[in-house]
Amino acid sequence: MSMYEKILEILDKKGPLSIPIICDEINQNAKSFGEDEKPVKEAHIKSVISRKKELFTVKDDIVSILPEKEFLCLKVVQEMSGSWQKLNVDFIKSRFIVFEWHSEQFQSFSTPSETIGSVDELKKELYRMKIWDWESNDEQAKNVQDELRWSIKLETKGKTFIKNGIQTHPKEWKKLCQSISKLIGKSFSRI
Image (cartoon, rainbow, N blue to C red; front, side, top):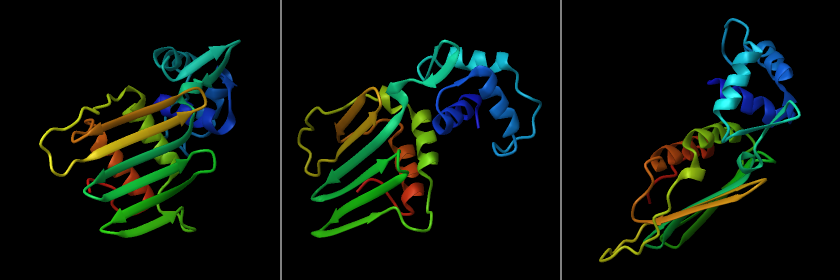
């Protein structure tokens, strides 16, 4: 796990904190992060935060996640030829629900009682994929019988990011589908 991911995880769980407290949290929880390293120094934390200005804000020596990057919910939809899949994730309650429609058969399932995947792990992947930077491709496809459509709506505390397209996906789409499949315990991929 990279240092910025450790900082994100701590701030996500505990809220805004000072750099010394973040440093203490990382050092105290080194084993839970899967590492046996030398203690992290405050200078390293400051350096990471200053490099990741797209994720963090510092005010009065308190670090927090930018409101535009504090996830509330995610909706992912893909459809083709009368079939579609839709995923809704509530990051606040750590729950999800999936809807599917295939050849006039509807199915839905929500977060199972036994854990399949982790909403927190999906969140980490979304930070790595930077969905907020994805380009939409919603130009009409010409002469295509089976039109493939996709859309993503990521709601954060500060902004809503909406991305969509027809026929082509962003380069990170496959990774997104793999992360969703891991979360829901079944395939979420091209229909």
